Image 1 (cartoon, rainbow, N blue to C red):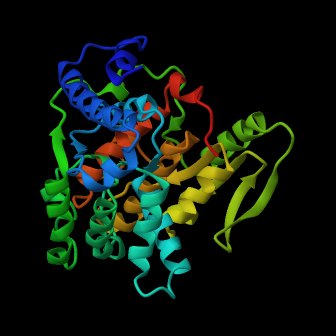
Image 2 (image 1 turned 45 degrees about the vertical axis):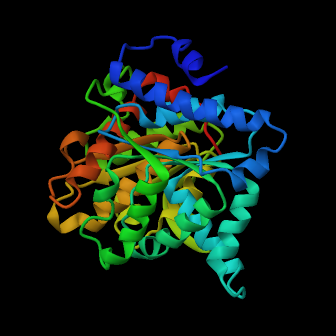
Length: 355
């Protein structure tokens, strides 16, 4: 079934002309890939023909970028393909670089191996903020394109605004140029925020703090994990212990300061998202201009939990839509608010946890 048929067959589909236009562009890419796949010399064509341009899809939060990419990914058949969140991809790239550190050109070895493993790579939430990632992205993208890997990327930013204001941004401009030269850049137009379309049937976010939040979570966590819990426990992530207020096999409860107030990496959040299907975070303060680092970690945490369909329960000092009062991350935090809204819906709560 092609992407247009998959899209039209969905139940409760809200009419969205801007989405339909983007779907049509993805259908053209699917048709090109299907034509190449039907040829016996498919792999040779990937190597010898002019490059197949991928798609860089950007636009406002909640417009369905991830949704469209996932429909496209599921519609592609008989082609080596992979779909990764941007944070997970870069974590994997750095791991591979370590394993290939004795090679003459470690990054070239990594891109060559990816080129052998996949021909279509979908990358969700392309958001560059780490200088270590920014400095290698140009050569990484160049290597992938040279290996004829077709990229499909979603982002909230257009290419020219990526890593805007970042350190040594001049060195990053190579990556922007490669995206613009090797991909069709599409903006999904204005329309409804599809994450807002469902009313919250059972709100999982509570503006309570201190002792009240601890009492609430203690009762709720016992209900979610009736087989028992460990109090004042630890979870080992990336060879480091992280303190947990309560923990069971499928549920864990952190204090905000423990999970976002100290130096945590994206790989920590990826590991936690794999291990636990329910995560409780208590006492989230107002994230003002003095808590930009904590806010940045919280954004990354929610991204990874959303990606793996983790069920999140939080208590906050104020309504979660008023949590961030700083300036630097106002744009990025809109995505977090939108995702928290969707994560609180009954529809999301029914989704299967992805280990």
